[in-house]
Image: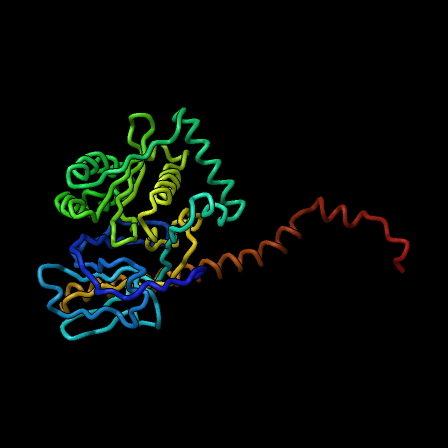
Length: 339
């Protein structure tokens, strides 16, 4: 963690939201399962000072299929599976949560990145400028009316993304009426990156106090070579720094997404917890994913052992099967120092 946060603890809040749980084995993703959840809503820095996990009871599961605590800061080790009164607690993810303190200027922030990172970011922005033949355009959507417009643009765009192909796009996870309600309360904003008049990428954000939390995002794969996701985040950060309304930009979890590492200045170890009623269905679901994780671990270990073994066999085999090399060695004149 490169910076220390001293945000005072505040009461935690919850929101109902669809949680998509992907089924992944190695590099392959086979769709996923959607749960209607009650999810921790409070901004991330606000609960850094919470000494324990928020209390969850069987009553919190009323009207939803699960309770989700995403990206909770790790202060101790937790088992993968625990049985609470009437519930199953499943630690489904152990990862890093990425934040960017919004202080000083955007230029100063960029100077805090490595020279190599700055160079790559500037190159991507220049490529995008050359594509659009003008300054990059990112449009913000606030309030209930504008959020409805954002949803009508981002929804079709989301269907083109890999998330949309797996059934985890914007329309599958975030209901329009819920986003409109949050936007009316000033708690949700949308952003669209344009290439001329063509929407290319979108970013849905939640506003939690003075923290901007990134949520659903995606881009048109036809523009993938121009890194629209990176360009969009760059422009969004530039805008947020200029406005000076926020204290933090929260990129949530996501070690697998390398682009986040280019931007973050604060990394916090975190865990994600899911709570289910103690019933056969959820219990089988949890056991299946624990087994899948262990199979992946075993497969990765087996792959390393096999590759290492093949390398050991390959070296002497190729050395002895190269007659030209052997001939050259045998025909070499003895050294003057050879006795």
